[in-house]
Length: 581
Image 1 (cartoon, rainbow, N blue to C red):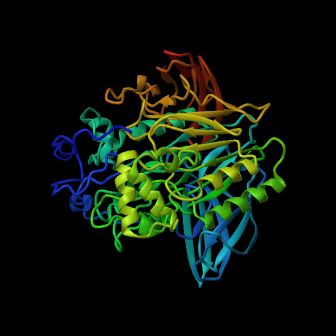
Image 2 (spheres, rainbow, N blue to C red):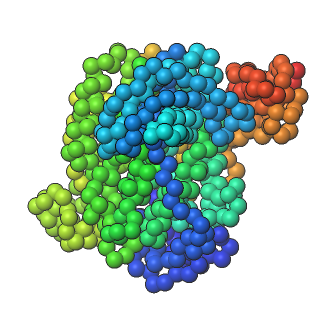
């Protein structure tokens, strides 16, 4: 993580649309994770913005915990009817908000019965089982559920929550990205990054350009799914900051056209004071469970863990916007859930299944081993910590913050060794993490521990993400190292974020709106390796052929022909592809 260069310079940058109109005395500045002082609110400029919880009736699948289902299979949806007895279930899949066509599929309901949830406390949760028709096009959809309760129609929709596939792939591919940090002032710690940061730019199309460009790249790569390991926002500048940061983050994440599995990081879970703001509460209202697991068909079982599993007291600031605890921890309740989940999976897993875990913090990067034992302050801290193993007193918290500023906090609390032991016991072979904003690959006892650089503009060696390509004939993955021993794929050409030029892109000569009878796609690859991308096309109805690549999807929606062009471009080269009748 890059060190803050000049905090005063950041706050007073007049050229950046930034939600700070004035700055008072700086209370405490932590080079790693501290706040930047007692600043005014973004709500002062935008008084109409308000929290708008997204998780309402549907509690599974969600945008952050989507379902990937094969045509002809069944999907069990969970709905919280909030004290009302439901009837007349209607379930549909709708084209998502990124699509330029309209379409809808009805999903026949085969069963509806009372159920329960480990994360949602309600006695009115219903398991609604539906079947996926064979004529559903392979796509990512919004889930639309309605029912009748107390004589009134109740309707809920969850975006980007169901991906329908023709089949599951033995050679599936997923992308790991982390630490996107919407709202973080570290995005402009280097003033040269001001444009790419787009800090609270009034024009939404110019806001958070670094993230928007990353999402466009991921959509072009079209992985089978994405794993996003926390620190979605910043959460330390003002009380109630989460009101606008959660809204902005949710808006941005809806731009993905592939399933994204999300777990929280420390910046998503701060409690900025005793009453006003608790990031964990916002998480449940916008993204749902703090931890969960999912399957990619029979070929992968993935556990998403919350490594910011601290009591609210430990997560809050005390009289300032600096926080004392930002390192990892998993407490026993969650650990027991992880053990039970893996035990149950062992009973049904086939020989081809791989198992992975993802969390914000890496359990093999521990403060107890990283902080130097020769430091008497470190010795005193661990002596005090070990007396309670749940540091809910101000003395312990303040010592942790002071040492954290000196040495950082990685895995700070409980659960690291137990988690590693559980992973080994159940054959988990890879583990995905963020937090440090750096690339790192570590292998221990047959487990691949991967830390990926941030998407936030503070990464080393560059802002990047990783692609994991499954070997169809083994349980191994490849392609997760772009170059060297651990480097991720750079978002920007040669890692130069200030220049704003991305590593690859696809541009169309004509509007992509269904009015064209011919189209030209220019695909530029600035990476040192070849790249295969998929470009969505909306044309007039007709039969089309590309001069390069292949059309992999082709369907008529009313007056628009939707197609997908798949093309491979060699390293450091450009292809111009004509699509015509």
